[in-house]
Amino acid sequence: MTRSGRAAVAAAVAAIAGTAVALGSSGASGPPTGAALAALAKPPTYSSLATQRVYFVMTDRYANGDPSNDRGGLTGGPGNTGYDPTSTAYFHGGDLQGLTGDCTDTKHGLARVKDLGFTALWVTPPFGQQTVQGDSAAYHGYWIKDFLDVDPHLGTNQDFADFVACAHKLGLKVYLDIVVNHTADVVQLQGGTGYLDPQTTPYRDCNGKPFDPARYVRRAFPCLSAANMPRRPFFAVSSDRTAKKPAWLNDPTKYHDRGDIDFSSCSQTCYEQGDFFGLDDLFTEQPAVMNGLALIFAGWVTKYHVDGFRVDTAKHVNSAFFGLWVPKIQAAARSVGIRDFPIFGEVTLTDDIELSAFVRDRGLPFVLDFPFQDAAAGFAAGTMNSIVRFVGRRYSCAVRWSSAGVTAANPCSSWLIRLGSSSNSANAASRLARPNPANCSISL
Ligand SMILES: [Ca+2]
Ligand SMILES: [Ca+2]
Image (cartoon, rainbow, N blue to C red; front, side, top):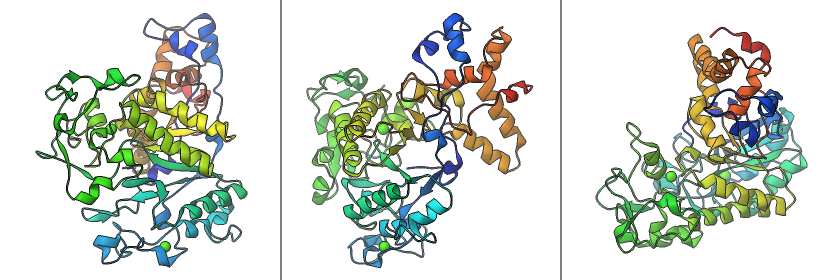
């Protein structure tokens, strides 16, 4: 679930460029030389994603094309149907038919988006939801129970197919917002929701033997039992046992079962293994879970031919996951003739160096540029220092190299290499994040 809202739309996709050889020769041993230095001096290469003008849309809040689906086929009050257009916390009736329109009228639907000058849409998750949790509803799409079908509040699977077909007819790309970190909150945990750290409560296999799950991401995973999970999982009502699709998601040992993330004091492991606001945190270290998530989302590529993914809560997934999962998705895209399938992650970090690790080390092709968003929001609020800090941080390593005598290299493209990925699919930089060499004269 995004915590940044629509402001994230304005954020550029982070700058990416470079090669493994450049990265490998620019480590802690000092400034690069020779061929590595020449590679660093090259200007960045744009991907197709960098040139898109992306319209972020929350389907429930765009337009109501079919009032008959406003309650998702459910009856009763907002606590059952999730529908209450008087409350910002509930469904308002918008749906895929409303978002699509008739594909010609430039006052409505996708033809309007096209007419506004956009070239792509990033659309909130359309999947089947747990309609209500607590005192709000799943209008945003991040409480998924059925990963295989469209939520009835938004329409039908055919409505989604028609939406993508219209977008493509108009020359618009569709970037689908997906979630691999968690599902809806269905599994409950005994003994409370407080986070139990692996230092004191390690994972234990079905025989009680402790193990580190990171060691098994590429091989047979230890056997598990509900009784030996850090917090013993259970279902509050019997219907919850079969609430999710596909069926493997109903196995409570496919989740971390450690309790909720405590955002006031949390290690990276806690971010990865804790429940995000109580949502069932998938045990993504398990090859069966990673492969299951690959099959689910590959299906949305091969069935509907969407053009890319935005990956929710990517900061909260284990470090090896994307290096294993992304190639499977891209292979599925190639199997239906899509050779360029951008995948960009939501990693809510405002520090460039920390953020870059998710591209450089964790296998995400792109990440949203939260450092830029943070700086821009600060600037808009009248804090000039936010921009100064942003520029200083983003160019600091380049300036250090320049000070060390690396005069032949364009320091800004050097920085791009530093932030860049070894992935051959990630040779890109967004226009907003692309450094202008003229800016490098700034006094820091
Ligand atoms: Ca509707
Ligand atoms: Ca997680």
